[in-house]
Length: 117
Image (cartoon, rainbow, N blue to C red; front, side):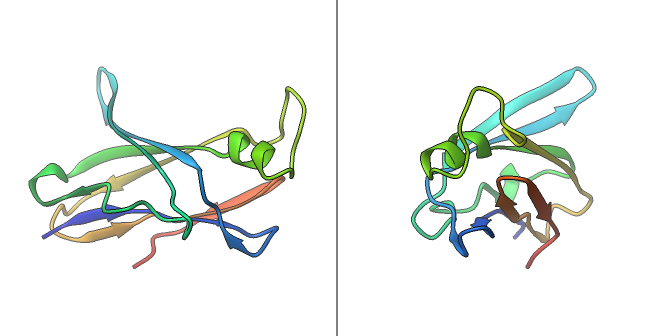
């Protein structure tokens, strides 16, 4: 059974990023459709998979991480204009029967991602 998961780590503080709002979109020819909105828990993870089973279909997706709100709340960034505010990660799911884990590592001035396990 396939599933999609994520987590957020704050590399500047060396700990999980709790309270990050994440929006999950399905990308289509006509635009994007919002599938879920979740918030990371104290462990920087969502309380369950973003999608699993029949809900995870092959195709293109976007995770939009509202990092700016988290960075402001944690005291790492301030002001009206941030270097990083919303971070979109677009990725493909070629085989809906697999597990896709898309983590985000953030700091006020950089981020990275990879396909995790």
